[in-house]
Amino acid sequence: MAVELEAFMTREPISIEPDAPALAALDLMIDHGFRHLPVVDASSHVCGVVSFDDLRDTLPGPISLMSPLAADTRQQVLDVSVADAMTSDPVTIRNDARLEEAVSRMLQGRFGCLPIVDEAGRLEAIVTETDLLRALATALWSSDEG
Image 1: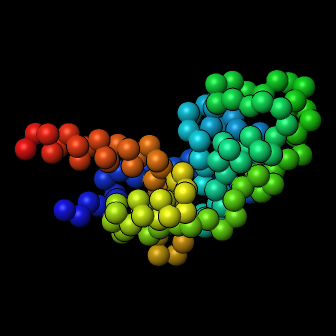
Image 2: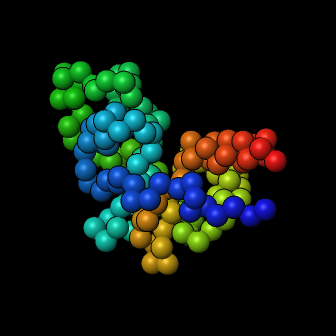
Image 3: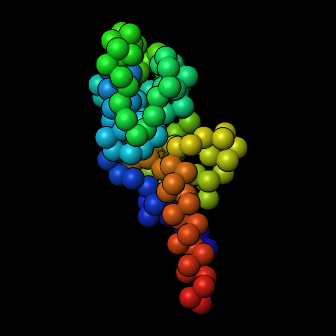
């Protein structure tokens, strides 16, 4: 049974531009409780992905998704941009792909997310590990009912 990716992706995800402060990306992640942000240019074309792990590797000191950086640490990193932390030219997937293709790409590349783009490469949605776990749970619960 082929499953459409559309049923499990997050449409119109929050994104960020590469010249935004890395602190803005961290604050968005803390405020919304997620670990990946697509990075888009002014035309909404995907040019990167910044993850919590990317920020942890780039910003000094311990960082957490539970609380913002301390004021003194924030002052030290005001000039660090999203572009300094992001993974450039990420693997993307088209909006008409099947769930199986997304799973395969994420497993092969060991990615935590895949930006989903339209024919022109503009961001439309994102699929994350959490979305794939939700898809697995749905499939397992559906098979229990049968």
